[in-house]
Length: 105
Image (tube, rainbow, N blue to C red; front, side, top):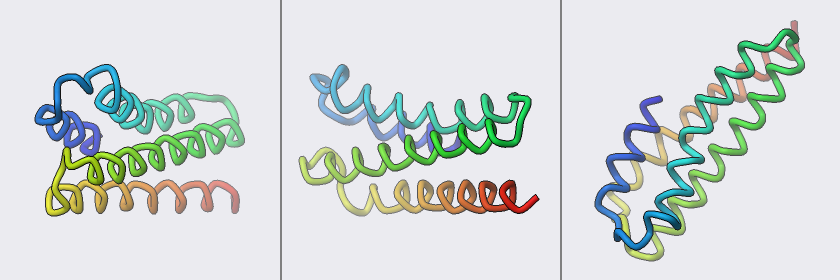
């Protein structure tokens, strides 16, 4: 959820005309990551949980893609984007590890 907080704070400085564009898209994608993890955890089967973790991975990649786009558009400087991207990559590694562990048991 830390990634969501960072995304929300970062997007506050982006152009206001993007509130229904890139700002909305990246915020929804960021919120989708922990929401899908939680929803999957609440499911009855391991397979369902894994599926929701994979959906969370997809949302995380969407966040990363939006970050690359806004960097190219000049909405965020590289030095501000790099720690956000590092956080995203860290979450991605944890998701991959959890999916792998669930597959083994």
